[in-house]
View 1 (cartoon, rainbow, N blue to C red):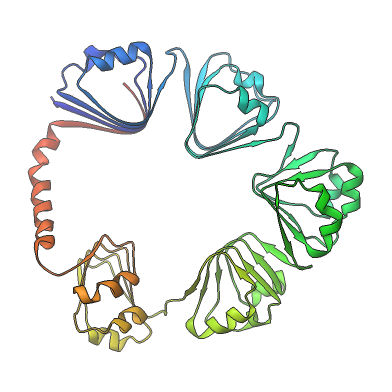
View 2 (tube, one colour):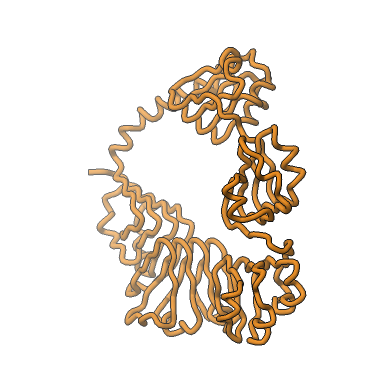
Length: 409
């Protein structure tokens, strides 16, 4: 029989733990994001050789149901009221809508690993709430819109006398948006940021709450909520004025993008070296970085060991991409400039190089476990690690391991 117990789980429920059922273990190790306990459960844990590695420990009544949601959950006033007490855990997004006091009455606690959004008055009344992420409260009585809400001509036709709220942004660039109609209906708006067409500023600005950040764009600007490539298809679809909330790629072939009249990028731009200066001449603003595209050269991948030589880079002026290899060794005689311009290494465990080349190799490496010198004590560590693993097999056989999303002790 195993002498040790190891439990790896997201939620460990120790509320009804019976100490006698686990007394034969020499050690019990619990790795858990959340540990649920009760007075009886705590007493049982104290009598056992338990090692706890838990982010949160929450005391919950034994008779409360545990409800776990992986993803998103919305609580509405039309939802049925639970006949029994429950503790709610959400790994994702929890949205609580107005008028849900009855639905929340049986809830003895809430834990959210993600984000929580709810009305201000309901949040103030919640008890035993833990949020590992972001919490957003919106004004009572507001109508909640999507995180990226488009306020256009059709929206104005359906608008009500109400405050409209969005957790992130509102987009008001439709040339046919009727600001006078919104005003006559008593609509107002609240969001972190509002993107406004230049000609709509005067008729809409006083309908927007003062705390919102106003972003003014030229008339007929298309707001793109995605990563895009600046090719002919993109410009035919969106036009010559773009506000991009995402990353932008400039293609190697074609120059349709040179006709852009406005380009604002809330993200990064990847551009070939030969197009960089032309791009900067049409770029209006960017929140991220302008990155040079790696040339598409030869690819080396899925090898236990590979040595990169000067000759290899001489044969591949367009570049060499190395990925998913265990050990990559860089020859000492490769010029630094060639390494920076022609070599890219990603998702490799170890990259060996001389100390003189280490800075250049670091610049062109992504998701690499270790970059360092050849030989010496560091390399001996690999053998030592293997020996330790083999020597530890016997200890593993003495241990019962449980891996689960949710586990009840």
